[in-house]
Amino acid sequence: MLLNFAQILQDDLIAPIVWKTAYGLATTCILGAAVYIGYRVGTPEKYQDRQHQNPELNNQIKKVIDSLKITDDQLIDIMQILEEEMNIGLSPLTHRQTSVKMFPSYVRNIPNGTEIGQVLALDLGGTNFRVLLVDLHGDSTVELTSKIFVIPQSIMIGDGKYLFHHLAECLHEFMEKKHLLNTGICYPLGFTFSFPCQQDGLASARLTTWTKGFNCSGVVNEDVVKLLQDAIDEKHINAKCVALVNDTVGTLMSCAYKDPSTTIGLILGTGTNACYIESLDKVGTWNDNYDEPKQVIINTEWGAFGDNGCLNFIRTKYDIEIDVSSFNPGKQIFEKMISGMYMGEIVRLIILDLVQQELIFLGHRDTYRDYTIPLYTPGNFHTKFVSIVEVDEGIKFSNTCRVLENLGIENPTYSDCAIVRYICRQVSQRAARLVAAGLAVLINRIEKPHVTVGVDGSLYRHHPRFKYNMERCMKTLVNEDFQFTLTLSDDGSGQGAAMVACVADASSCKETFMCMR
Ligand code: ADP
Ligand code: MG
Image 1: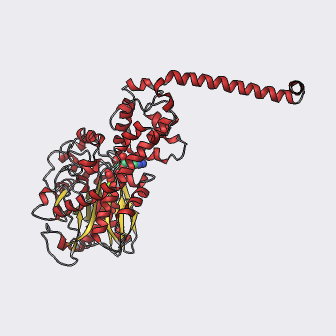
Image 2: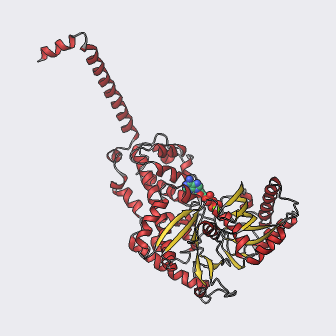
C-alpha cells in the first residue's frame, strides 16, 4: 500500500498535482493558525467560546434586548389606555389632563379629486422644509414642483422671528424661480406645520409646545399663521396663508384625493403622529358649527402619549436615557420610542451597554477605551443605518460591516454584525408594534368595513420591514370585521396642505379663484 502510494507520487503526471495540493493545505493550515493566534491574542479568553454564538442564544445579550420586547397582552393594555386617553382628550372637562390632546383640525371636507387650482404650500416637518407648487387638475391627478431648503440649527433654536423670516425668504426664492412673483395673482398658501397646535380655525393656530429639536423663542402660545403672514407681507410676497394643517392632516387629504376610503393619516418621520376622521357628536371640545358634514379631522398628537406616566410599564433604561438627554425631557414619550429622530440613538445606547458589559466587539478591546471613535458620539448611529443594517439577510453582513466600520469598528466579526442586526430588528420591531397598536385603536373606533391609512415620512418609506411588521401586528389587533390598507403618500403632507387651502374651506376657495382670475 505504502509502496503503491510512493509509486503514484513518482508518477510524472500525478506528482505535481499531489505536491500542489499538499502545499496548498500546508499554507492554509499555517495561515489558519496565524489567524487563530491573532484572534486569541485580540479576544479576552473568557469570551472566546461565545464569539460565534447566535445573539438570540446568548443569554446575557438576550436579557439586554428582551427588555425591549412588548408582549401581545401588553399591546392590548396599551390600546385600552390610548383609547381612554383619547376619550379624555375629546371631553372639554378632562381635556387638560390627557397626554393625547386630540386637537380638532377644522378640516371637515375631504377632497373628491375634482378640485382644480394652483396653490402654494410650505411643509415644515422637523428635518425637512419644502416649498411646493401644486396644480390640482380636477381629475384626481396633481402636478407638483417642490424644492427642499435647509433650516440651519441656529435658526431651529434661535429667535422665532428669524425662523419665519427664513421661511418667507425660501418662499420668495422659490416663487422667483417659478416666475410667480408680481403676477397680479395672490396665491393661496397652505402651511404644513407639524408641531402641536391648538387651532381656533383653519387659519389660526397657537403652538402649544415645540418638539423634534425645535426650540425657537417667542412662538409658543402665538398664532403661527399670523407670524408667517407677517413675514410674507414684510417681503411683499403675493401669497396668503389660508390654512394651517398638521402633516398628518395633509397626508390624509392628499391620499383621500386619490382614494376616498382614506380615513387616517399617519406620520413616521422625524416624529410620529396620526389623525383620523371623527364624528362631531364624539368631539366634546368642538366649538364651531354643526353643519354638514358632521365630522372633523382630529389631530391626535399621539407622540405625547405617555407624557403623564401611563406608558412607564414598557419603558426601558434606554428610553429613559434618551428622554433625559433630550431638550424636552418628559415630553413626547411615545414618539421617543418610535420615530426617526430617536431610533438610531436607542440602537447606539444598547450597543454601548453591550460594549460596557463586554458582550460585543470582543476583538476590539481598545474600542472599549477609545472614546474618540464615532460610536461614542450621541446621534452618530443615524436611523437610516437601522434600515441599512436590516437590509442584510441571512449570514451576509456587508451592509452591517460598512455601517460599523463607519462608526470606527474596524473589521467587525460575524458575531458583532449578527448582534447589531439583532438589536436593530428588535428596536424597529418594537416601534412598528407600538404604531400598529395605535392604528388598531383608530380603525376599531372608526368602525368602517374598509379603511385606508395614508402614510408619509422617511422612516416608513425607507425602512425595509416597518410596513411588514406593522401589518403583521395590526392583523392580530384590528377587529376582524374591519379591513385596512396602508398606502404610502409621497410628499403627501405638503400636497395635502395645498388641497386644504383650496378645498376644506369653501369660502376661501372661492376667494382663491376670484383672486386668481
Ligand atoms: P420630516 O419629519 O421633516 O417631514 P422625513 O419624513 O424625511 O422628514 O423624516 C426624517 C427622519 O427620517 C429623520 O429622523 C431620519 O432619521 C429618518 N430617516 C431618513 N432616512 C431614513 C432611512 N433610510 N431609514 C430610516 N429612517 C430614515
Ligand atoms: Mg414630513
